[in-house]
Length: 234
Image 1 (tube, rainbow, N blue to C red):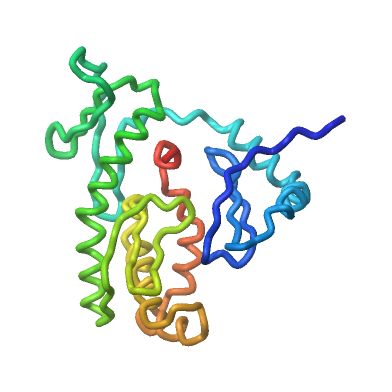
Image 2: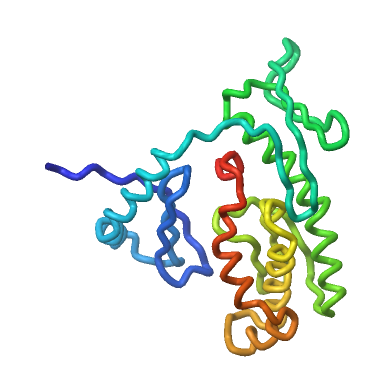
């Protein structure tokens, strides 16, 4: 029997040193280093077919993602309840607003999970800009390592990144993580201001600022478990 084709999205990364396969709710993502020979991809995907199909089956068989009743922003201690109401005749698309303290009102179809996810993601982005950027500036002053600029993004595979010019990008989904892990991510990127690579000097500096950095690093690698399903759709 002829094997079915595995669809995937392809992304080039200057930071990637090897081909990375990631399976999520949006399917298979293949991350390749810049200038990687794309002709080799079918062979790589075929070699990992069994694992890819197993991961895709598990996602397919998992409970469906539904519109949330609340949003728990663990890192800043905010719990928001959510109410839904149908779109009004004058509204062209779904929207969200803060109706009262810690109460959100989503105007739109609660069964349209992608639409709900879209408006909640925009709201989350604004919250992240309001809280994460001042927070990393505070940590920066505390440890005495300055950076050029900080922005909030929706990275699919990174909690944060630091450019060669000293700009730090923060993932808006950091708001879902415990405070200790967010601080750990901040310190990781601030250390990259001084030490761009993960050489011994990087870990020496990191250990001085965060003695428990190795244990926290392993926690961060598993931190996707803190993210609600709707937040993985965008």
